[in-house]
Length: 183
Image (cartoon, rainbow, N blue to C red; front, top):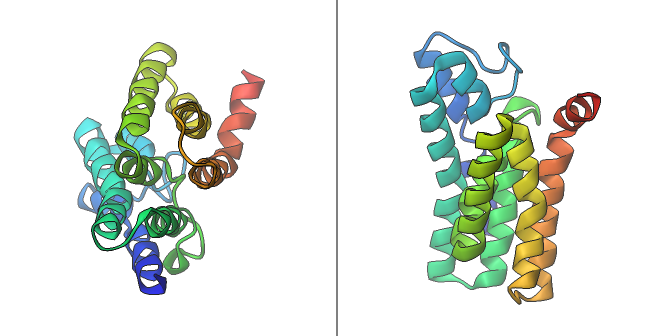
């Protein structure tokens, strides 16, 4: 279990945005919003670059969770999910200054609970299409995942873990929340 969690954290630290940005002559940690995530790379480097970062960041959550489900059980998979998100958000290799964790959390969430994950992906797409604000979609799915999990009868401990992941996303979105409240 400890090995799985440590490996998931290390995978979560993979600097997707910096690697893609470097290939484009950009540094998303120093440009745009300064956030090493898909939205900032999308704004700086275009749709293709943003999609690549988003997909790889989703895989950072999905792959460790999927492997864990194959060799262990749901409690271990949930621990790995949290570890991958924490690795992305607070990477030891970058002074605990990482991304906001939405794609990594979403990838792990899709594997942990595909129906809830797909519902949240749909909510994200509709929200972003309607509001044109990625942060609003991100916050919407952070709140929606544990609520939908509870409504679909998932065990209380799973709902609590998903609420914990949601709390990480909300903490990382504090600047976005302040901006949205001022609007």
